[in-house]
Length: 117
Image (tube, rainbow, N blue to C red; front, top):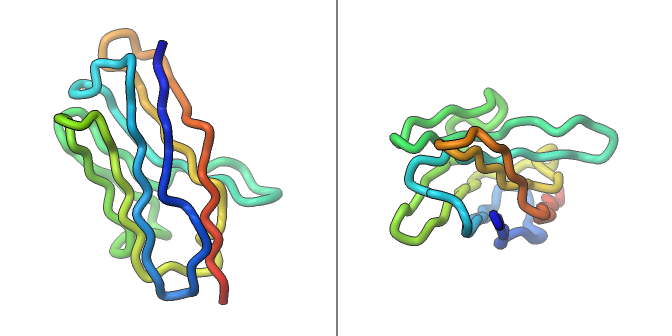
């Protein structure tokens, strides 16, 4: 059974930083494409950042230069370092994993990030 468990969310002032972690189990992590999505109240879920099994990354324009996605295959964990946070970054952040073998898609339970002005 695949599990994605996020941690690291919280309340931070604008301009501050947070690091989100997502620990994966039940998946061949080293070949899985991983990503972080977010959903603000009243808005659709959107891709924030993604990283392939080969380590290639992509980012939403709104977070480029501020957020960094990375992965540690030895720990089966993907990270999202968020710097220079803005109130508009406030959302529930979800970890996503796509199996490199089956293509199946999995989601974590989400972690709340709140940025105060």
